[in-house]
Structure formats: structure tokens, C-alpha cells
Length: 83
Image (cartoon, rainbow, N blue to C red; front, top):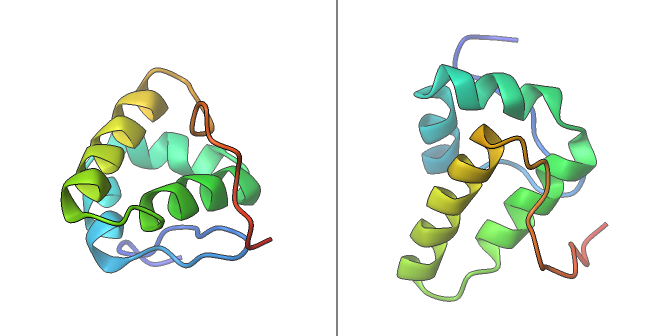
């Protein structure tokens, strides 16, 4: 795996902007690579399902905070319907 490549989900690919954010934070990248592909998929789907840019940006912030706190999946979300 190259320096600028990170693991994706099972059904969702990681968007370039989110990939940059995760790579820029080594502690988040370490957790991201440790969670399962299914868990990564849940985060990606949750973020991508936002209808507004403000919501998407807020979800990215929440994801980063939650991963750093040891939470491996989005809370209070029914889950990805794309798998």
C-alpha cells in the first residue's frame, strides 16, 4: 500500500477529501486501518448519505472524534443498505 492509499469499505470507496483528512491525522489513520472493512463501510456510507455539505462536514468531524475515542462504528444509525 502506498503512502497516500488507505483501506476502503466493502461497498463504498473512500472519497479523496476524506482520504486526505484521515491520512493527515496519523492517530486516526492507525485506527481506520485497524477497524474491519465493514466498519469502514458504515462510516463511509454514513458520511456519503448526508444531503447537505454542512451535514457531511459535521459527520466527518464526528467520525474523527469517535475513532479517536475508540468507537468503531457510527452511533445511532441503521447501517449501510448497500452491502
